[in-house]
Length: 179
Ligand code: FES
Image (cartoon, rainbow, N blue to C red; front, top):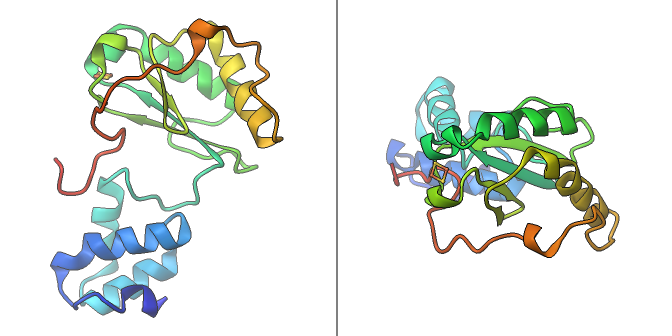
């Protein structure tokens, strides 16, 4: 674990860099990494947790094979994002912010991804789905399960359900240092 921080100067300003390093290396930031970072940077583990939990780029638990991100920003909210979140929670049997016990899905929300006119927006494994509808959620979930089995999408999708190109908007996750 210490080698994760080998290039990190023992300074608080390098905390985000160290967290990125751990996240990339492990797919999340495990407790041992938090302790190692705190030791190395000579700050408390509470300080590390504070930054870690502020940014959605970092996770305390391993992410699922499929990451479903639903925009809950204002424009998407008024277009029904809450219903979309509820339907995904029902379909995956896991609350937003958590990963399914089989580690197949992580369900998360985010505030505005810069494609407001296409809301509500659902992002699945990096693919944007605009004007998402509750009725299509079982198909989207099934498509993911099929991909996990090495099959083509099998949820009965129609061409108009294909992911939209929402353009070069900002990352669906808050980026450290990006506000
Ligand atoms: S509020 Fe959802 S993309 Fe802007």
